Length: 416
Image 1: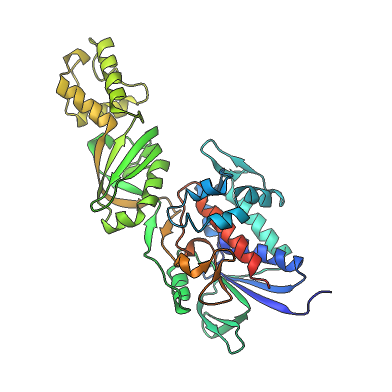
Image 2: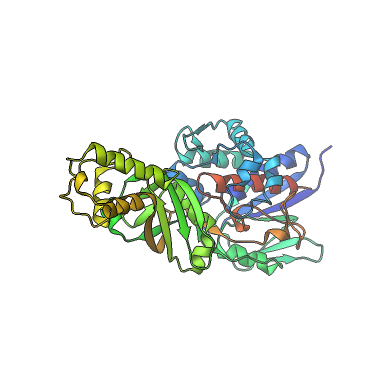
């Protein structure tokens, strides 16, 4: 026999985690034969904005890491806390969830996973269709200003001006919006230091001049920030018209997010362009080229892994005359080439956002959340999911996986 009780569930935030949680909440209500009125309040005009722009409009849904512990290693903040949630709902569950609703995902060589359509609209349409089926109310231009606890221990949301909604459970899934932090703080929560994550580096150096679009598949990076430990990363690196970007650099920015902010985005980066594991190997390569091409001009013979344009800029940085042949290079000049290939020092003078897909490091203090349910330890009935918490992943679909997992767990527990 169905319960006559109607539960009012309020989701604050119409992004990836909020909508996903609402869908799971509706599923659980149906399974438990509980009548639930689920309403999503979105302050802006549009829902699922980050889903739309993610992955260049293709939507990087998740990453092909099927082991929970390994998955956790991709989160500079939240690594420890996410283990239990990932054991409950991880990548394979995400793939199945979409497949069960007619959306097939594909894996790319770097592990990122996208819908086979290569179109974020596929994900948005899936969510919207499911929301309609589940009779979830999606209300836009609804700014939740306060959460008040009523005399009968319910939660009252003050929306826009003099509009109220009384709820049994409330999920705050506002991402990195300051209004979400203020809402959580108003009910007793604390927020850790907020800093941009996933950003590119602004660098002016002759070795990068007019080389935008040049890439290095196996670069190794060392970031040195004053008063901080060094940060290491390796993988694809890209030269841009403002400096450096690419997966390895974005990962580096995530791990060093707070330290870079404290240093006002001034630091040194040391680059091993070829990715060789020792300077000795680079030295052997350069001397092999020299010995086999004694009569050749240095501009015309260079390591196969490099483009000619980059090699010419490296020669300019080393202050070696272009007219020289390989046989004419002295030990000091050869040493400069080897050093700039293996340990090229560049000065970082600022940051740029990574396209429109910005991510913040920082958020609601994780000690204040029960990660088995995603419920607040401070204010019963209030739940959190997604990026509003002090959790952020490196680039590659990890932030969406956090959104799906924590949203799914919150959705499991808001109906009771």
